[in-house]
Length: 50
Image: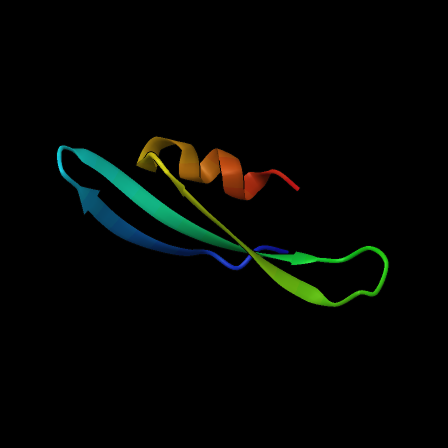
């Protein structure tokens, strides 16, 4: 299960996107959030991975 939150960030000449994914811990079953800043083209791939 992934929660998709995407915010566009612009730094100088590069366009970046911050993506936040909700990941369930296999040990405890609790959810944690994983954040990453990347190019907009890579967001869908990153969200699809477990």
